[in-house]
Amino acid sequence: MGEVTSDTKRAKQRRRGLTWLWGPAFVAAVAYVDPGNVAANLTSGARYGYKLVWVLVLANTIAVMVQYLSAKTGLVTKRSLPELLGRRLKRRGRIAFLLQAEIIAIATDLAEVVGGAIALQILFQLPLFIGGLITGAVSVALLGLQSWRGQRTFERVVMGLLLIITIGFVAGLFVTDVNWGEAVAGVVPRFEGADSVLLAASMLGATVMPHAIYAHSALVNEHDLLLDRYAPGALSENQPDANTNTATDTDTAGTLPITDATVIRINDNTIDAVPTADAPVIRINADTATPATTATPTDRSANQPINAAAMLRTTRWEVITSMLIAGSVNIAMLLLAAASLGGVSDTDSIQGAHAAITDTLGPTIGVLFGIGLLASGLASTSVGAYAGVAVLSGLWHRQVSIWVMRAITIVPSLVILGLGVNPTWALVISQVVLSLGIPFALVPLVSLSGDRALMGSFTNSRILQIAAWIAVLLIVALNLALVYLTFAG
Image 1 (cartoon, helix red, strand yellow):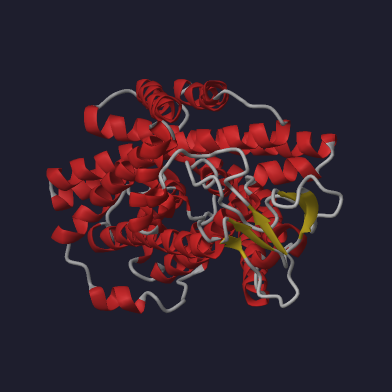
Image 2 (image 1 turned 135 degrees about the vertical axis):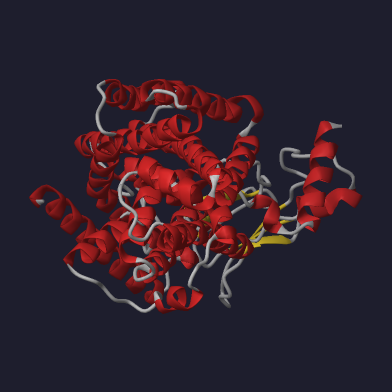
């Protein structure tokens, strides 16, 4: 009876289209509106007005491409990026990669916990250390949703927090006199002195967060999808030849090779087909195989397989939509700062910017800003911890408790807050450390997503691969320049 109910639910999901799969990209999008981005956007608008709007537009365009590659790689291979690396790296390489990834996870958590602590100080005048403890405790509860209520509940809660973030940071635009003519003109690339170049480099260089890449490639495989979802490469990882695998034909009781030019059918329903004239056809009679459902023939539409290309199209639109929301929030923050913080002193810190926004736009907007910042810290620290678990499990080849990961990453953040370190300085240092980890996520991502032996017919097109490598070189160069300029003063 439970199987029939499950199939009926799936049939309803299919009638709604594939938008029921939406969720992972919105969770990843939280990384693009974390407290570090808030600080950079406010500083940019306060110092240079609308002149650096183009940086955020370019950054968001790159973000769409990177997150789509992450999701596509996870969907096609049915493995997260850390898992793929863990299967290719030798023991020493895995350990080295794991160590840098955990350092990045700690730096990520530092920015998110500090942001949440600042928000609680703004809203309730709590000491930063107490705010950090509360942020950590709430994030543990959010992570618990994944274990207690499932992946979809976790995704929906994070999507709800993303909505709160959007409202909190965009509300000020409705009571601010934005110069829309200058805002549109800001789409044209330009600089105003060496300091604007440095700030633009920090904004663009911080576009890609390593944990967003790791998390997205893992999240797409956590859904309760149909059993017969299939994509080339998903079955090829355990074979000496990455382009060939075997499958049993239950009609002939034989073993046949599966390649990129193979048509697989279950009860004559095509799972995946590459239009090749001489492509072999493997037919699997589900009636003679292990029963997967007790549904009646009227429910058969629920069992129809999801076409891999259709799933990728849905994922592409999900990524575009989620990144458009995140990009709009970032641009809204810059416009808000440009319209209301220009020429105002003490806006280099989040607390100072909040005080100026409250004085200029009123306490209601100030409270909404604080709530948005709190939601940003809570959501992003949870996503960061999830990514840390994905990295540990994928590279260590063992399942890791999310509670252990939470303890590993949050303790350094609480120590820094307890020592009374300037929170703005802590945010800057965390962004510098994150910059060092970006190549370790981007280079393998572009390389693996462009590997035909792994991705089959879903490998990156030549144009996409070239664009991806250009984006990688640009982001890596900017981040290296940012690290140098930060320490060079």
